[in-house]
Image (cartoon, rainbow, N blue to C red; front, side, top):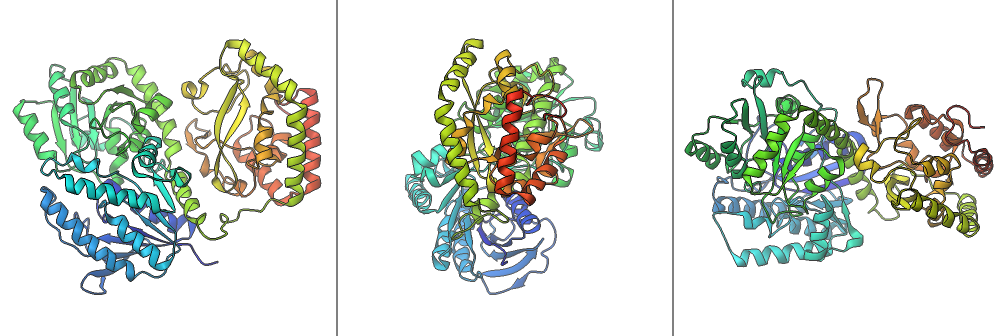
Length: 624
């Protein structure tokens, strides 16, 4: 089969060290290595070279070609003026854009064209290439303009703002798909740029949870930089215009009387000189600036911190999502987020209870939250553990797979690789049984709803996003059997024997599987089947033998089980003990995928009714 060919347009790419450039590099590397794609990138000349220019061959005055990790790079040459002033940045962007338009003509025919937002007008070059090759066009927003452009401290222009607004409205409205980093950004694009809500999806940025892991506080990075005997408050990443880092310097001034607290900035950026000067003017001896840390040493650098600070200027919620958040989560360290309530960072922090929150631009409040973590090590440890658990939802493999599924789904008549078509007889059985079940069970469902409500006054239903065939997400509804907000308080963990989260009513409905009755609607719709692998939560995790949370995607069989529609019951549900590791359950799932037939489905449905009649679904050991 011909590999999927995706062409990306973005100025920053390997070996650039900007966050967007590094994330795009990781995406392209993974699409080649893990999904067998052919990838081309129309990038600019590196502004911060990290090594020699390898195997580059001049294809013309404007374009050179090179390869990196199986990715074909077309270097669209432009100017390389200093980014310290607007004139230099603008000239670099415009000259790259002109070259990129030409480079787009030199591409081999791609199956999908994707444009990012560096610079904000580069989407036009991607759109032109997509129209030339009659390929689907995806606009992947990392920043939203002109709102982000208003950060510029050395340039203001209503004309430029109106031009950027027109460009982004044009691209958002005409893209076959719009990819955003979070729900707030999605809303900004739908309401403010005219993006079609049906074609606008959320795919967050990521971190490699195997590369960045919790490390000891006393490590080489901490020792080399003299941080082992300090309570380290760290900001790691670009020191740019969007974070409002002056607030952290002011907070450091408020903390100057605590000799063991040290505020450490790790990274480079156009605001670094101003921050250094401000710390010097305040005569702060508790503030240090360290250079950029290569990603190979990121885990060690993060491990030297006791607490991190994430900040975003007011007015930027939904227009920028700080990618540094995901590395901090993976490091298992607590953080203080100085962000607006609408920010994606705020939502993640509240959902996972992984950090403390303050409003941006309030240095005394920020200092107060830092002191709270300084004085309460148990709270800091608990938040750090929650952060690591949250990171698994944003693991690199999971988000790369989401992009691959998005691209593959745009091809004419495409189904995801290896995805099986549902047999007509199986689908007919599902429709007939689920339709009849919804009618017959209606009185029983009404009685269960009353029992759940009267039990503790909480919600009747429990809605969860689930992963279906081909990685598609859908909403699954069940009668609530656990205490309200159990996921946000304890994380998306599987139920265990004598689980304290399960209510009195919940124990009855779980034992008889009556909590699953609302899923008859999902079966009737086609999101689920009566028989198939259990539908997993997107953020579901696994705990290995060492007691460590690991990405569930690493378990053999995870990918194969998504070739078919998930089921209400199945081989694993009927024959496997509830508490066996997922590795063994996935073996049952793979067995079903190999042996599935109409009569096997009928047999499994009959056995499931028998288990329900006996009230044995929650039984540990054999259910039959």
